[in-house]
Image (cartoon, rainbow, N blue to C red; front, side, top):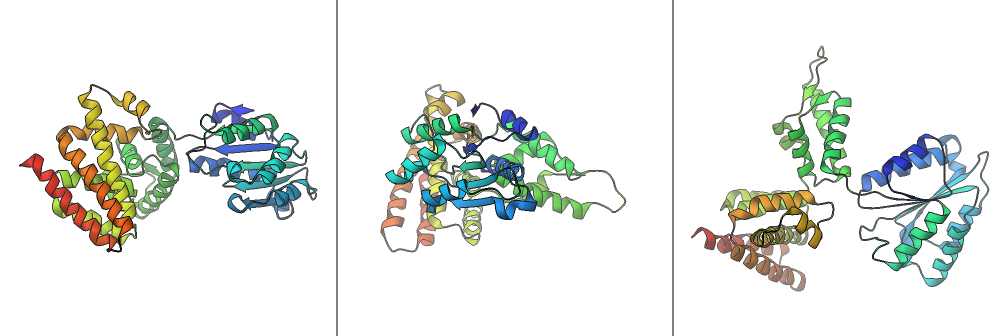
Length: 358
């Protein structure tokens, strides 16, 4: 059965109903981990989990070992639970693929088999192997794609979780946190824990009032993702704010981000701005950009780029994208210090941007 909505999976778990096979895939890792934990708790209660639970690393999977584990008899329980993390059906050799196909066509009645796929590009619409796996699991049990949540859903998620921890925050503050974390629920969850812990230190012993989460607290306590930080770097360069730009670079290097990762994110930020600028000049809006380019689950990137691109000329953005591509080649093909190349690149981007200011 292919669940069209998360609510269907959640309802079946609440009712205590278990399918023989589950396939969990999609972009949102937080939701995959959350539902996986719930299914494990239901299929293999803790008191006998030592005997009735087995977890495999899908990157080192042996079909024979998996089948042997699935066929083992449960101990003092109705069923066993077997989990395969990072399952890669398409990466299996022909013999293992054939064996696992047979297992999924006739699943073991005393075992709950849960397969999780980590590859974000996994898509039954684009891959014959992915389509086959989805069809097999659909017939054998349940399939659910866990997509990135809409911004409105994330706002409710953040406010609900923080209010439960004795905090309050406005919609704008929730949106601020979402943007810093690029809509990634796993990152958001970690940053919420830090905010809640910080808020506890501010609470007076006799106060029962919730602690208000402010913009300053979010800036002080939470960390931006590398992409969010690098977008600020691109804006600082284009706004001729040299000191701020170099401080962002230094902070990212201090946090041990590799120069190649920073450069790749910087190239992406400039490309986003260039695409938005070109689309805007053609009279295209947010929906058209998301439809024609790879911005699935990244609507805030499109929105921010459309908001900011008006300040910059298409020539400067195009020249910057081209220059960054050449730096990327040099960084990967030479023995030069990558951090120095990155700092030189930032300086050169200031010179390119000066063309629109001059």
